[in-house]
Amino acid sequence: MRTKLSNYFRASYPGLAIETTEETRAVTDVIEAAKAVKKNVLTWSATEGVNMYLPNPRRIDDTTDLSDALKVREKDCIYIMRDIQNWPFDRDPILARSLRDLLAWCPTEGSCVVIIGPTFKAHGTVEKMITVMDYSLPSVNELTKIAEGIATSAKKQIVISEAVTRALGGLSTTEAENALSLSLVETGKFEPAVIYREKVQAVRKTGLLEIIAADPRGLDAIGGLEELKSWISRRKLAYSEEAQKYGLPLPKGVLLVGVPGTGKSLSAKAFGIALGVPTVKLDIGNLFNSHIGESEARTRDALKLAEAMAPCVLWVDEIDKGLAGSSGSGSGDSGVTRRVFGSIISWMQDRKRPVFLVATANQVHGLPPELLRKGRFDEIFAVDLPRADEREKIFGIHLAKLGRKPENFDLSQAVEATKDFTGSEIEAVVNDALFAAFYQQREVEAGDLVTSAHATTPLAITAKEQISDIRAWAKSRARAASSPSVVAIDDNRAARRFTKES
Image 1: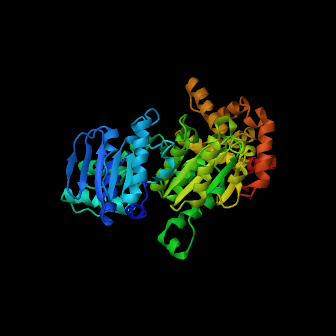
Image 2: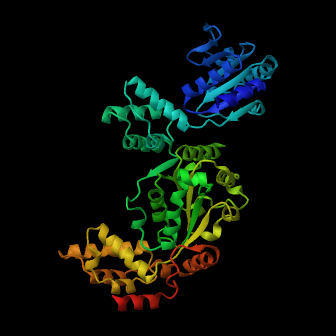
Image 3: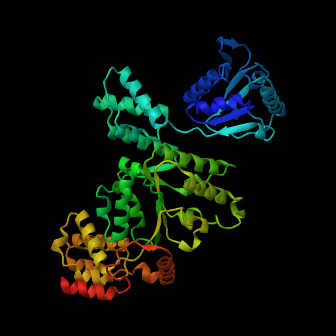
């Protein structure tokens, strides 16, 4: 960042804008970049007015009002202006003219205006004169230095492990300092679990991403889908140092399509456990804002936050709903959805950090063709209705989760009774059977599962046409998530074989 700032100063850019909540870090970077190119520095805020910082510290009186501050002229100087976006440029033409005059004067005298604040929207008269800079969260090296500084201050000899820096990823400088200090107070060392706990709170406050607490069983919590599980398990090796030396490319991600309730979201949650990295969820609906340009800015911020937390799994659930209309004219929302989609697509193509994208979709016909193009994802998997052998595993998983031993149940009739049921519907069958047995003050039995199944009408029947369309699309355009060892469509034969063997 400092090198980039120095280059802008050398190139006589009139104005720069840094959007960040880390004002102290940004000001430090600007000052150090100014020193590197031998520029003077002055700062302004509404509370302090104009202060010369370099070369000789001094205060310029009567400059707390922005209109007065904009009249100050210093050659070969970097003007650090804080929070000027809060001033009414739209309603005050003299104030807007004053800023334009200063920006026009700066490059002729070797100066530059640097605006720092959490948000920035340039007034129309100066929009072309100000360059908005991306200001990333602290890098691994910066986080390591922060941890070393805190350890030195506490007079402790602490080795900064990779687990610690990984837990810090995605935090601002202040948040990282707070988490590290709290970890020292609670444990006497830098404990990743404490840092991670604080990161959950910090990320939640942004409203952009959500850290997912996945089932610790990981892929074992999924019944069936052996082809998908085998595929993702092989990708874990790609994050090792040996894989990088071998030249193995980092995995991009996977798109899961198919029938609702068949385990797409469950799989996405389990991928983080399988890969040994955290899982964060992006809700596209949360990105949209009524203010002009805010949706696109929130999208960029969310993706930057995901990259700062890398390596990680980024889960976008029901991407088809979030991007509905992105393929059309965009007239309904002035093209905001299309621009948000464009930002996501560009990031998918250009990202450098190891962020494994997992997107799930039900309404496959509405997916934009740009999303399905080869190279966006490593693979597109179709998740279909579970076969007989997969339904047996799903029953076993849910019974075990509720404290029952699956081997104590003859599941053959329940498996047969749940033909065309989704995994979530099988879970509902198990829960309903437990309610029935508890009401009768007895232990649940296999017959309760059959009774509950017979009382349930699956989605494959209530929405037969839609489900058939989804399955037909996925069959010809995606890779099957289930192992091909048993032909999925011959479910009756599989059920009979399973019953006979049981």
